[in-house]
Image (cartoon, rainbow, N blue to C red; front, side):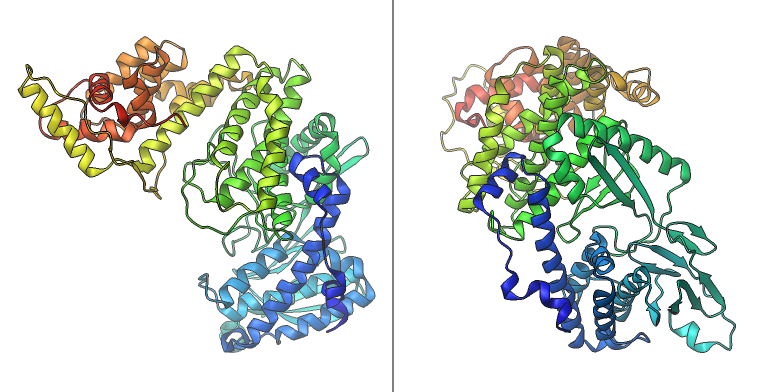
Length: 631
């Protein structure tokens, strides 16, 4: 087993210079640095594969199935290396081979659960080795696990093999395995009475065979080529998934939009196009979570793979590809150098997430949205009428969000010296952007959407001290029963609110969607979605989106007075009131909304319904130190 491991012997150490780290930090790294990361990932992948096989030897359940020992697959991979190293690399470097290795290793070590038999999961290595051998044209005969009536061959596709054996075929009924035979360029897979013959062109279709399709976009000297993987069981982030074939019409839509998106990247960020085309290799399509929302993710185990929904337009697709490339690159860098301690505590606000984030999560977000901000800035500066208004809104939105997150990480002790250096480079790159003018309406819309998210996040995740709520409730009740008494200001030592993450937190986004509909031309109220949003929006939301803050203020106050009093009404009231002018009560409601709402609810339960602005103003006056320092 020596030759396959030659790339990860001590003599083949992978190092990255400080100069290259600085280039990565500033978003200026090219294809050379991206290739350096890929080489390091190749070694890591081999180490993970070897670790899976070694761990499997210590688990009897891993060898309890009807497939050969995992070591046989390693031997086959060595044969492929001798005959066709290129085909070996294509399979080993495939992102979702990495996902399989990571998930299986964690399962073998007891840190994840999976309902499938352990032998079946470990046995996927035979499909990996078979895929490499088929690509290399080797003659092979091997048993491979069948999962969900399919046999997966990474980088190639899946064979569909429903179990159609008769009652006398007990072995096939009990053992979900298939026999793969490949010789003289012909491959067939047999399970009981079902036979699938792979087409000579493996990317094509054949009875029982779903081959992977490729998306290709060319712009100038740069080519982006992605395998669209909708069938590999390990293409997701959290364990095996069933195949979900993409219809031809959707595939063509992806191809059209990718071509336009790639043109935008190459035109506006030419210095990054080389790195992106080197890094990105596979795309997994998933449904969009909702209009104006893009689902996108990547994994540290799956270097080069992106899971995403198709955005609403090519510019958003370009921005999303930039975003995920940043994640992948940072993940590769983290495999070479430490940027922060692995502190899992979720305690930091991320303007792009509904949940509190640990240091590592916020670091990833800062780097990703730094890239997104850079992209929209370049598009906005190009002064293209077709994209300028949308680019102004997106640039203003993510510039402010990224800078806010950078500020939150300034004094985080979990950062290493290199991590601090990376963030310092990002800050130095971004700081001049803060002074760049943006269209006033776009900046205002971006600020509204940001405020909506921030106040909603505080309302869901930050809880006031119980004793403080009781003290304020009692003080209000005393004040209304003794109107002539003069109350001294409250104590200076009010306990701080506590961050208690709500794992089920999600909130209605109607107000933010309305603002987006007005801010971006492609999201006009004439579109079906925007029309539906407007139809479902409250009159207060409509007024706020239209900048009628007085009407919105009255509308949200009426909503709060109703028995339901939803969280979104408190958020809207806080935003509308702050838009009418700054005063202590409005500032308190913006920055400690849960405190005001909890006192209000406590009073309501006792039969009192003060006006929310009167209550917030009274608390701010009675407890002047309840107002936190500006964050």
